[in-house]
Length: 388
Ligand SMILES: [Fe+2]
Image (cartoon, rainbow, N blue to C red; front, side, top):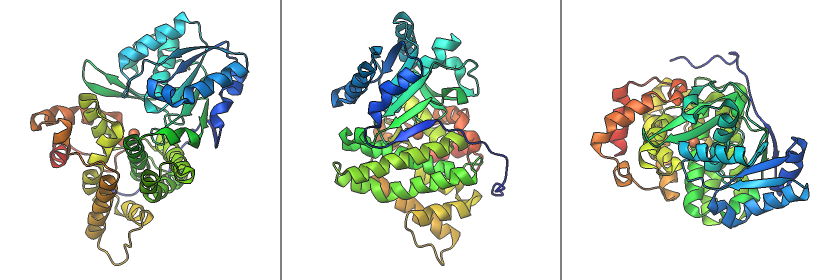
């Protein structure tokens, strides 16, 4: 396949964002500027225990704003949680939403926003540009360095009945402002740091090789890849080091700006399918699949993967493409294992008999369209099998 033309027509959508220490404390001022009467705060018990929700509530009170808290959000937010949250939003007569947390509360908040104005079941919005009516003002305060839901036009909701994840991609769900405060990532335990960091790493890589990439997204994707490959392990070794944490948060922002505009690829399509079945951490699913998908995609865009390998510190001079592919595969595998992600799919609970269904769902995920090489269902089955 030919690489994309450098000047192909592309647009770039990003919300207003504030990055830096204490950004979370601006939530009150922004909510007030958006005309808040009563704010729905969407968060989860872990983030509340860490104290980040309280800081946001203090900021809201500081502006004299009323609020109601919805915290019944699990990891991999479910359609019924969106339904419950929407009913709560309406009952409490809110008119602005503030999400405080990782990808799960932020995606759930986006879902609540969609349903509260569009008045249809959240699962009906699967796919690209299906949201017709704008959502209420949405402020996101991310507390992980990974999902980038705070800057993206993506929301991923689990359909518990079909045991699959639904990807909703729409400009309507780009938040109005992201208040990105690296301090909020200090409370992440190491497993969450590793999984969310590997998720952001996959965002950078999938954005860089996406068929919809552009010179602007390349810049952000490449910076994300460079920052994560040099700061993830140091962060895990020294979790209290704010410089490492800050660089991971910056990397997550970069990766989010990139993938929100390029969409993703096979890693995410296959990880969504897995996550829907297993309810296991999204970043872990991605990380287990990534090296195998690089093997599959490499020949379609070898020059792009060579740049990724070099950004990760591999000396590629004099290497044949196949040697670069193998070196990149093992470099990423080592990074993943050093980060403590060592399971196989079998250990996560996947059986060989599950593979056809997993592959069928992955084929239907909208993320698959921008993968640099279009797979058949058999190709996807073979990759799941390798990762067993
Ligand atoms: Fe992701």
